[in-house]
Image (cartoon, rainbow over all chains, first blue to last red; front, side, top):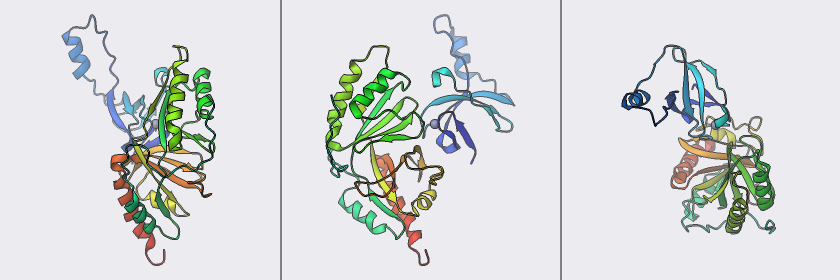
Length: 86
Length: 219
Ligand SMILES: [Zn+2]
């Protein structure tokens, strides 16, 4: 089974994780119009290659983190632990 | 408040809710399923408190230590323990405090008061989650081999020595496994497996079933 590197627990089987999709910055709610919200909710870049994405170690420490994965090879390129996730 | 210093075993009675999914008939079934090299039993019921806070904040760590006698374990997937209580890592800002059942209410009120007295800049929280999980103990020379049938965590003592804990999947269930130096006063190490109370019988059935393989002639 493919292993996902949790920044807290180390490499763990994929079955322990849930996928949260591509990292999409949340718009500032005040000036955002319907089109901006629509894009935030539904539009993804779907690249072939490295993608920054959210994962949660749902059956482990239950923490969200961001990693970069190559969508063509499934190779995981890095898992920086961001300050708000520490 | 000083930590209660009573010398009692971990306790075998359910003091919360009154419903024990691993009551007498299950304890018999589990003990009869044991082999020469693997033993299984329901773990003693204990108070389980969930603590949250910033381990790097000395005010939080000090308050926890003053109430429980234990510091939050600094390393992920480890636990700290004394003869009464255990503090298990659940996440970078989350721990589970295990205590004898009769100490649960005292620890809960002590921690609640201590956390309320901290400055607003310190995040700290405690909640009673005693009924959330029910635990089983597995021990003996082939205990790890048994669990390997349904768990991808590396539970070999080389990777999972006494004092380690980890959350993962066992027999399809989300579980918390801790490697303890002794169980209920008896001086042998055991793997204590916490599962959701509503699902723990599934785990018990799975263990009974998996044990059959180890009872075959020649095993
Ligand atoms: Zn984790």
